[in-house]
Image 1 (cartoon, rainbow, N blue to C red):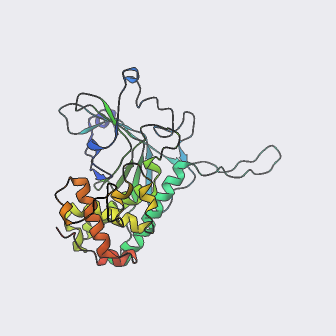
Image 2: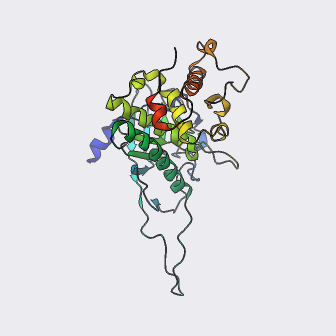
Amino acid sequence: MHRWLRYILTLFICASGCGPLESGTTTPLRPDLTEASPPQARSITWHRPPGAEPCLEHLPQGIHEVRSGGHFVATPHVNLWTIKAPPQRVNICKASSRENKTGQTSSPPPQTTIQTTINSVAATHAALSMAYQTLTGETLPEVIIDLFPIYEDSRSGQTRFVTDNASYDPAKSRITLFPSSNNQPGKIHLWTAPFIHAHEMAHHAIDSFRTMKQIPVFRNASDDEPFADVLAFLTLGSKPELIRELPGFGVDRDPSSAFFSDGTPKEFRNFAMESNRNAAVRAHLMWKQLAPDDLARVILNARPSPL
């Protein structure tokens, strides 16, 4: 692609994910880091450590391509993300084992956190693909994964970076896993969390079902977010601990929990609350309707939330 064309390209971001990108957790740019993009870029949470070869041991089924990095900028009075630097394709490592000086072949290196993450995304694709194929006779389309892109947003006048979030873009069948805001010991990084992977893959399945126009439940876009939580929950075996351990999620996003973390019940009277709680109530009511069975039956018997 010609350089001039690459720089004038703009990118719409679909906020079908853990939350709208503008309201996601972001990190202010400190004055001493005005030349850094992103801040420090020292840990794997922002970028691969310096000197590490950007490669994967293998590309699992269901994953069309993995890309890393890229720099996107939104400036004041502009609602588009401009591509400042494109992401780079992550290739398969050239060799997983090497012959040492004694002539013996060493064991392949242990899986990296990134490879584990890619495998986790692929596993959720496989689970949802079985249900998708049962109901439509088609294979669930593959997805593209973008790892750790820099999204620099200065529309409010203060430069901030999109972090600790994830999104799905139906136009590109692309799941984006944003970097973490820091690498503190004990921090649970959302980009490594199976529930986040399952949630974004659920958005992919929902969009694919809608494209097929065979499942009426997906006609109402307002049900997408809560239903993605329900599908993700079922895909991972209905294990509350996979949601409750995540910062910013807890029991509030657990469809099987009848109460919010503050003890408020997830009931009809809560529908007038803010959108996040409203979606959580919808998800809980959906979960109670669906009763965990097999994913195909769940999807086939799904009904819009009673609103």
